[in-house]
Image 1: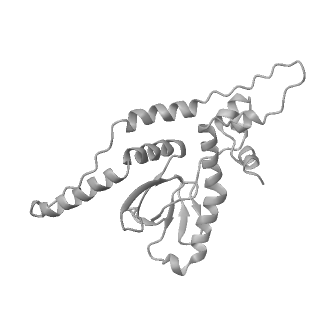
Image 2: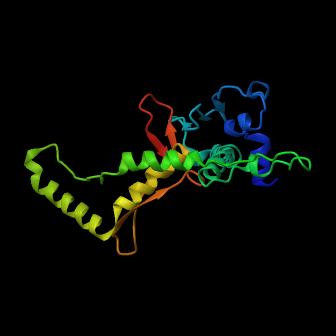
Length: 214
């Protein structure tokens, strides 16, 4: 099935619902609930994966497969829909059947999602982020200076403002985005952002809610 067919059938958007005149209360929408994937993995109602600290994911590859499969079949189509709306591709409006000859065809697209995201992003991330390291021990000031020198060198090598701006924008579109720190072939650090279309983080199931794997 094509993504467009999935979006129209399984993920109707509330904006289209009211524009098209359909009654949202008759579409069978319910509150999101926790989805148990196995005895050790589950997806909470914020679409975040969790895994039991008493299990080793390496010993249970089927649990990882279940999480990847649920992300691909349930979460990713929703993220694709949100991206489409940000770009002004309101599928249910564009694909609506034309009206009979002579009747008014009032299909209109007002791209409010992009306007809202871009306006909020300007206010939220308009001031550049300042990254600095402060060692909790005053006796380790030399180490703190060394770390800050590395941070300054990295910020000169890479325009981090652009990275943070993009991460902020897409976190508003999708509801989440990730920053990824990696090193190149010369062991030089870089930061980039990853969208949730092909990325997710699994947290443990403790009260601390620590990242488990990603």
